Length: 190
Image (cartoon, rainbow, N blue to C red):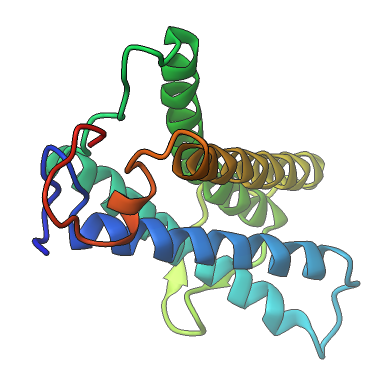
């Protein structure tokens, strides 16, 4: 399997980014939901730092994923004569929205954390520069938007997963297979 995508399959870099970010974003969502229910205290304050640091790390990986998408464009969506145009439009819209929310969610978290006025450190090492000035009124609003964005991201990822399973089990095409393993030969449903 090559590093780059081909016309009919995803390369190893795209696959690693896809599955790695999917697992990491789900983990961050669950972790974020958990710490949002906590009252900050000395014995749990480090969890907030881990969430923020991981968010910055994921933002970097998401930016790399976008760059990689331009370096190695993905294969075209598999269609046939029975594929409704609305379904193709919906697939493109969901992909665009997923990328938008993958960028927006950590940026909103960074903005909200900056608005608290507390210093952020990347896993206890270097200082993460604030991207907004301290603003208690904006802080709560930005954290709310961060939570909404994260929830929408997860909801769209579920829709994306359901569409892949539909394509695999009902349409019986290679949409899911080409993101899971290297293809052995080419078929009419590539």
